[in-house]
Length: 255
Ligand SMILES: *[C@@H]1O[C@H](CO)[C@@H](O)[C@H](O)[C@H]1NC(C)=O
Ligand SMILES: *[C@@H]1O[C@H](CO)[C@@H](O)[C@H](O)[C@H]1NC(C)=O
Image (cartoon, rainbow, N blue to C red; front, side):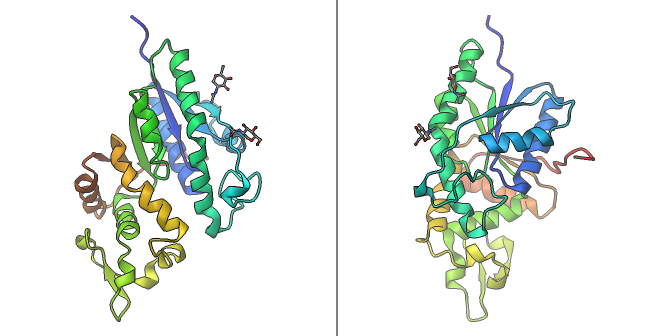
């Protein structure tokens, strides 16, 4: 019998809040005896090397990233550190070009392990497209949300339904498929959400990416609040997938 592949591949979007939560998750899974492979683009892998505790055996693997002029990004940008907020969606979109390299990486990891694919791929909420590759190799695919389920349910419903466009004269609105979340005021929306009209680039991207979550096997939430329970229920009925609260995922002190 060939040895079981105990690799878990983790692929976060490189923005501050995401990285911290994904590293915390990786360190917790590592403690349970799995091999963690953290995948990212070259500049980000260098940054991650500095964030790992010296005792960690997490492997960092690089995939090449060419952002091109078509992406409308400053050259050489691979993370949100120096990116103005209005360009973040361009970076998220440019990551889709990593698809062939990511497929190759999973193929390599499978070959290296005698034809056994990794156990699981845990990806960022922005990488709905990864589920297709995972399933091509018969790998379980999880999406990990660094925020709680309540906030993410509002986020999901906002992009899908754009309820702010129908706000009343007092500029209030509620989510048509998530009424239990209560009423909101347009001033509570981030600038990029306020201008979302269904046709601008962020709207187009999110309205394609969010429904793709239903291709995943599981959604994991960094959830702790009681309020998150209704967010978990929202995703269970919306996506018909396993939805699990994990939180709180914290990095060990000093990291
Ligand atoms: C990156 O760009 C170079 C030059 O345009 C090209 O030769 C190479 O194939 C590209 N790599 C990937 C991974 O797309
Ligand atoms: C896959 O393995 C080949 C052969 O070892 C190597 O050249 C290539 O860079 C690897 N690709 C990825 C994305 O890891």
